[in-house]
Image 1 (spheres, rainbow, N blue to C red):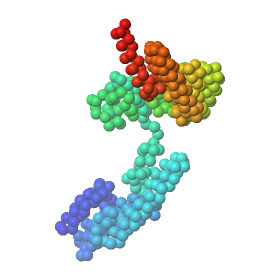
Image 2: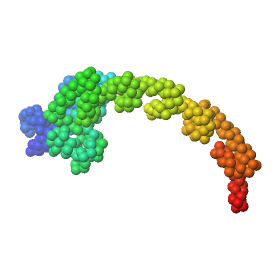
Image 3: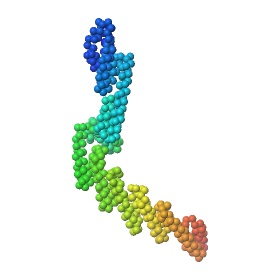
Image 4: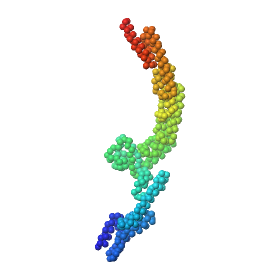
Length: 438
């Protein structure tokens, strides 16, 4: 009776550790041994017998290099015979071997991945999972880095809701739950304009859309060869509305703007060319070089205009160059030279104050400007003194109004002239006295 109870207990243990399959194995491998043992005086225990059986199975799998199955059966043997130190040691060895093999294959996979040999990388990561099904690194590479594209990128616009986006892309507003899940959103919350969303791809719908996109991009490539750039931009723009990260559409858009800019440059429409080039990704082709060439043409034109004293046009061209590259030394020098030349012209016409205002706009450390400011201040000081002396002459001749006018001119040229200020006050007092006498 006790033996029968032990058998039932063993069934329960096997079911707990290994499920129904192991119970069936137990039935197969213990045909009449347990029942026959009831009549024997010193029978081999059922636990010991099963433990030996599972050890043999473990060794068979180990020879086939199926180490996970070998470990599985050895662990069953250990559960049946927990005091067996040899079994415990075999389990430890198998666990160590499995961990080491998984580690080695994962490293190989990473090396292949870095070399962009993705086929071999995938093989190594799959082998890693055969040794360790829960290996996080291998799972990450297979699910995220080696997985084919399974979603598109969409940037929300004003008025978009999750349901309207779902209707637009899936023809079904009930599929908004997919968008919620993939973007960790709240179900009823409206996304803010400009929010970037991942839209999971549903094969039946997106396969059709993918075909349409491929056809549109093929058409755009043909239009690019025909130099129909506006049409290329329209198609590429529509594709990018649907799939923000579509590289081919982005390349077509860049190519169209680039060729439009080159055409405008050839037509010497330099400002329009630069504005068009600015719409191109700075990393595209040699767009930076193209912009520099246009700017250099503008600066050459500005030099010619400077000789013709077309100062405003010169400044406009130089400042546009600085808008693109604020470190452009040629443009900076051209601006300072323009102000210097313009100011010196005003000095020649004796418009000293206006000349000084022009100089003060420029860089005071520029060689031409620094000298021009020094020159104009010297001239202004001399002119101020000349007006002051002329005022004194008028004062001595009792021409008080004329004297005041001259001294006021003195102060315009030299606001710090103390004697001119005092003389003006005295002359005005005398005028008031004369008026009273009269």
